[in-house]
Length: 416
Image 1: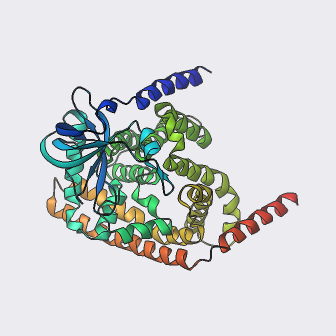
Image 2 (image 1 turned 120 degrees about the vertical axis):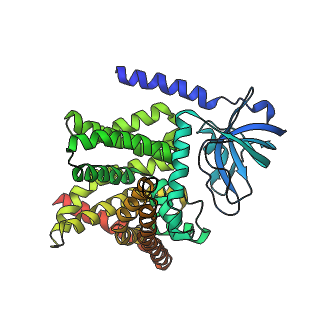
Image 3 (image 1 turned 180 degrees about the horizontal axis):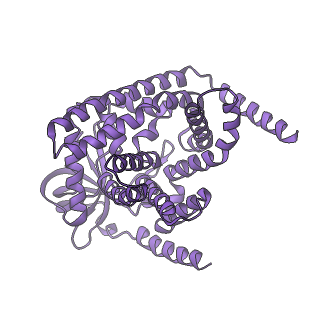
């Protein structure tokens, strides 16, 4: 009861902060020589880019920054900028920009017309910004095409550097989740730390203590978007559960993560990303134990059975949410596309992350790792094209029919 009360109070205080609109009196006017800091990497498609930022000084506040360029100043840059301050748009074509931004505490858009970089933020965030810039430079030998941008998306999230057809292929194939840092990235990161510690002669306990620090650093480098915070929190909770020897109750850990995130931002419950993330994990916990016996009866290797079970469970669990928010549910394309891409994901992620660590010490070796990382990423891109083709070739009536058949089979088996 005390925990619920603390969460309620924390959530109420956060809502007051998120609902505040300090820039209300300046909306509709031009801002000239305003100081602005960029709080996250640029993202978006087409010829424009967006990023969350903050207008500094008296009367300042959080804003969504818009530029008409394909590449803006790096995260953490402080700008002196001129432009117009506008209200976000209301519901249009199924997307409510105003509500989406309000849930993040942003109530105004600063459309930049002219700017110059005058500095960079300091402190811990400044260290994380410089680490991110160094990491991205380390991956430069991978190239600048879509395969190289997939590599960057896997390691640090985002699709801003990809062509629009490639982005659409990832969406249609059900592989778009690979371009947003999630629990899978954190799990592979922890696995890499454990392997490196084992090679260096350390114990698993020492490796997991190191992993806690690595997760925090990784979240800082990637950026504290909701999906990254969810993944980082899940990884930290998982490591602590093992280190403290507590019962490994996955449902309790899932509930704890959800509770902490909602205490920090109660509006996150409306975020499709949060819904998809937790639905995927819940689906894995709920469906995999029921699928695995059927798959094991096929005589396939355990690794293949596990991959099929996890991919199918996560795809089925997230399909209704994808259909509700985005008007598409790509089960028949997502399952084969994810299975084909699965072996390449750890290869691409590990080689990219190792390249960022090795490059400052051994530039030639780091460049080699970065170049190698583009090839598994190129295969993942190919899987996205294949999945997009499967999605286009699948009749619209086939998915509901298969789902109805699956429900009927489960009902018959349960009755008997």
